[in-house]
Image (tube, rainbow, N blue to C red; front, side, top):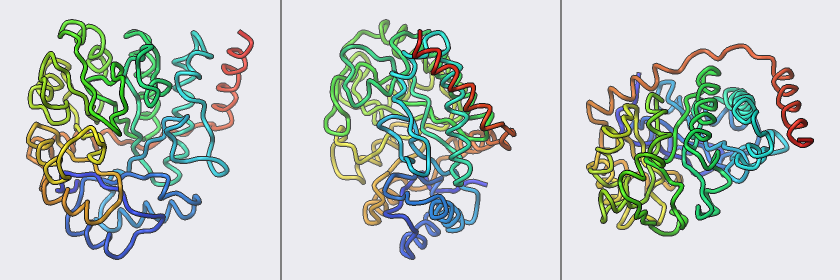
Length: 336
């Protein structure tokens, strides 16, 4: 059972308000997303995720950004703190894929305990010396092979634990030299370079259930519109990269996009995105997004069903054993 509304929303605080509950019940969004403002204690967060699902009367997917490092909504003292991915991967050397899989399994266990069943990871963006600092240390490496291998290990760890991975940021964010939270970057590389490099990890991960777009102009394909709002770039994501899963926008409040929220939403859906992602938790803004996004198209509904069908019962794991294996890799890396 899926929601009919073509959106994923956050909420304003650590508990669901009556107004939010009524709005979610009426619009029936595909799912929800948790941010640090929604997080206090494990008990509180379990109640919030339960209340969100109760509002729509189904096991709606609940997402979070728990990459580790700077982008980590769950933090000490209740949850583990993680080294930024790029730093952890560099330290692990040849064991990087195993290390990231172990780490992802531990993150998944924490998420499931709270009622969160989707994580906005892996990142398949390729880092370069020019990659903006807002993204660079969140990446998994600077080569197609390395990024693909680690991203696949991360995705498989989440899937095996019962957490849906959300690959990001299609079709590739690594060449961005500016922060899309603040401005719109343009990538000027030619098509062949993009296909052989930036797009390649995503092509290798095209079977994943869900993915998120990049608010970036790829001038070789569309010199005017960011990928999120470009019918040509959505064609590339579907036909060249071959991604067949549920495609959500990156956060529509980011200043890389122009216009009011209604127009940002409408342009993204018209271009071919399945789901509008609005993260701020502002009810008036959510109402604008909902009105513009409307209901999921039949194609989006089909992809949503397929994505949620990949949710599985988590495998039983020995948490202490996973922690010990991770510690061994980290210890070996620190003495390498």
